[in-house]
Image (cartoon, rainbow over all chains, first blue to last red; front, side, top):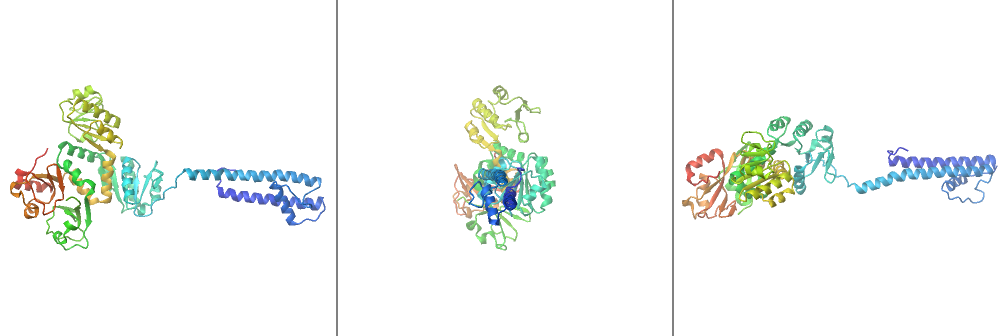
Amino acid sequence: MISSFPLKNRLILFILMVLTTILLGSLGYVLIKILVEHESVSLTDAIYFSVVTISTLGYYPSGVSLHSEIGKWFTIFYLIFGLGVIFGGIQALLGPWIELKVKSAVQEKKVPVPQDAHVIIAGYNDVADVIMDELEFLDIPFVVVDDNAPADKPSLNGKPTEMENLIKANIERARALVALGDNEMNAVTVITARKLNKKLNIIALSHNEGVKDILKKCGVNVVVSRDELISSILSHWIKNDFVQAFAGEIFKDMVLEEHRVDKYAGKSIMELNMREKKGLVIGIYRNGQLLVNPQPEMVLKKGDILLIFKGGA
Amino acid sequence: MLICGYNSITKRLEGKIIDETAEGKNNIKADPSDPQVLIKAGIKKEDIVIIAMDNDEKNIYITLLARELNPKIKIAVVVKKKESVSKVYGAGADYVVLESELIGKEILRYLLAPKVASFMERVIVSEELQLIGMKLPKFYVDKRIKDTDIRKKIGLIIAIKRGEEIIRNPKPDTVLKEDDILIFLLQGKEINKIRGIMGQWILQKS
């Protein structure tokens, strides 16, 4: 039997073979009883004989067993044949069944791909680990697409550059995609992703400056440049300026939040008593422009996004 | 300033680069994990060294060497592996940047709070916005913030540095004291305007 034959099919085949064997045995029994031994025969006796023989039970009540020479030989060969069918069949069933049991015990249950409003992480590495930890903490669904995706996280094994894999990751319904591979992989991933979902928020990591524009052309919304980021953090440290000295302490724990103005439109920051209620409004995004240090009298408009500084004294 | 490791990050910084693959006039083409090379490069007289080699073992080793050769030097190290962070601090570094964490946090910000992220980008990367420290002018001493014209004239006080303590987000009725340093967040063009009015009080750090 072919080892890749599914277990279910094997079971059906086994049952069919046992039935056929019983049928053949019964037929032989009937023929011998009538033609050789010239006795009357019942269907029940015929099936009873077959089952008792192939099950190696071997006990026949008087009148059931075959007592002629030919009958005895038939019983012998039928017994051997039946044994072959039963034991061969059981072995062919048991092997794959045990294999399946062991596999399911060892392999952890695959976490399913989220359906909706999830984040697709294209590429698995240290950065992906940082992102996954935080998303997990915030209960935001995500899926990792990579050749070596971790088995204990929602993941898909395969290259994120291939359309098929992104479709499997439900890209049509995803909220964002972060491309964390090398420059080439990210560019191709982004082109593929953009084709599949026009509205997707795509964030890509670029490993050096020149790639930034290429990624933008591929359809990335935000490019995070590794070199730029690390070198600017270092130069703030070198200058020992206020960003370095204070940014750490001031901006620690993400105390900066954004709030969209909807119901507050038409009122001023002072009127709303934002400071007591939410925190210090340090900036307002209006029509894509950032206004820093808004005056308390400033009237909010619909669509404004407030940057609010939380915590502190 | 000395820089160990020649790569796309260190090329953006201004300093003398030491690496076997280094190019350029000011740079030194030699292995920085050799103490003789570091001494020749003048590590004993430098006050800052940035270490950003391609592997963390080298980073840790060079940190040890640098600290040994110059106990006063300030050392910043860029590492790749999480477990290296504590090792590098243990080896004597003053500041450690874990690449994956920095990048991951930045991407998360764009993912979760895009406006905050682009705001932070302006402060940290493009420096379009700056955090400016200002010594408290005499005539504001012992006044409450809301009784002064600071907000009108300069902007929001986002923090006050009082001695070693930092008061974040001070309340309007906070009383200002002598020697307080007020911290503002200002846009490039405003800074010049304010320099005109309050120039003598602004702290120049460079």
